[in-house]
Every structure is written in structure tokens, then in C-alpha cells.
Image (cartoon, rainbow, N blue to C red; front, side):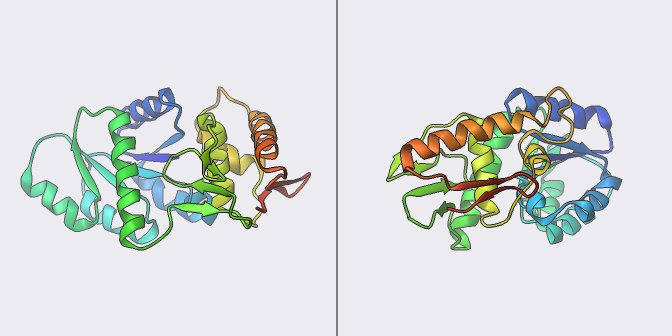
Length: 227
């Protein structure tokens, strides 16, 4: 999920809609609501944030520095005008990338993905999560998972769900948490029950290729990646 931060509700809504068209969950937040949202968000949900898109508003540099101390997700700033001084100041504050409006959300997604890959390499952190048997590898950079070295092509929602479950290996997550991570809080046109259908199809595909199910489902606890 991407978080779009801007003082102007119309700007945030525009980009949230753009992400939605691309099938990517997003949520728009006013600058004043970000800290409250972070404090109220469980760690596993915060870890699922794929990036922050920051609009142009007063005291953006101080806000960025505070946000960077709370999350390691890519932060991309939107500039209204071309300004070398402002761009350099944003990088100094902790911004990962600066783009000038207008910009398509597909470019934002690509830039955020590139930042995550560079971060994984520079910090020597694996961009993939293998299961206990070593047969199933779940990638965290948007690629399809692999089973025995062969890609298992999945629809975006199923791939995002598997990624979220793998990030929370051994920890049960609820249907509601999965829904927020994959669809975002503002997608009111879709009901949480859709998660059950996606997971059912995902588990069937995994069982067919693996011969076992790496996702455990318990009625009240939720779903757990146990592979």
C-alpha cells in the first residue's frame, strides 16, 4: 500500500485514484494525521507500506525527517516547480527521490521499486523469503514467487497477499489486516470477504505445485504463513 500525504484533499485523492486504477492499494492522509495514523497502525501493517508520496506543503523538510525516523519505506516528493535548491534540501532531509508534477503513478511505483531494490542490496538484506523446505521463494520486489526455481504466475492481488503473509511469517494476520494491506482503507467498493476468495485460490495453486499448504487458516486467529 502507498500513503499519499498532502494538505490538499483533492491532490491526495487524485493520486489515490491513480494507484487504484493500476490495481495498487493507496490511502490519502492530511499532513496532520500522519503521526496519529502511524501510532495507531500495527507494526506488520506499517511494514507493508510500499512507499510514501509527499506533496508540496510548508515545512516539508522537517516532516520528512520525522517520517524517515518512523519508517524505512521509500519516500518520494512531488515538486510543483523545478528548483535545484529545494531538491537538494529534500534529499538532505531524507527524501529518496524527487519528481516534478505531473507524473504518472506507474512511474512512482517503478521508482519506489528501484529504491527498495537498492536498499535491499546496500543493507545486505534478502529481497526474497524462502520457506522452510527451500522450495518456495516469495519475492518482496513485485516479482512472482518461485517454486523449485520456476515462477508461479499469480494475479496481483494473490501475489500481494502472499507477500504480506510471508513478511509476517509465523504470525497470524486477520482478514481485515490483509484487506487493508492489499486494497487500502479507502476502497469502499470492495468488501473484506473478497480476501477469502483470493486466499482460497492462492492456497489451491500452492498445494498443487508444492504438495502441501504453507498457509494455515484458523477461524478466529486468521491466516499464518507457516512454510
